[in-house]
Length: 110
Image 1 (tube, one colour):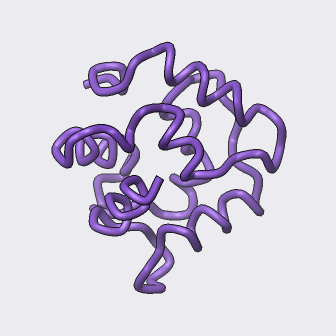
Image 2: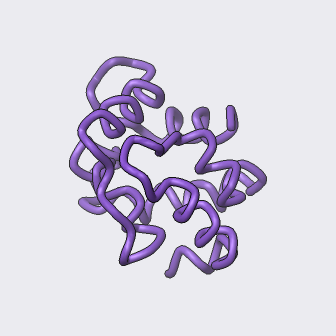
C-alpha cells in the first residue's frame, strides 16, 4: 500500500513544501495540511502502520526522524529538535515512543 492510497498527492506535496526549512515542521500543521486529520480512524491507522517501519506497534524516535520521507522520498529528515518536539507532542504516557492511540489523538487534535 502506498501513502497516496489514503492521502492526495497534491496535499502531500503542499505539506512537504510547507516544512522544507529546518526547524519549520509542526506535526499538527502537517497533519491538517496533508488532510490526515479529516480521515476516518481506519485510514489514519493505515498511515500509522506505514510509519511504523519496524512493525513494533509504535513509532520510535528513529522512525520520527525520517517521518517526512514516508510521504515523499526526496523529503528532508527532521532535525533533532523537531524529532524531540514531535515525540513530546505525541508520547502521552512517557514511554519514549508513539503508539496507535497516541498517534490517533495527535492527528485528531490537528
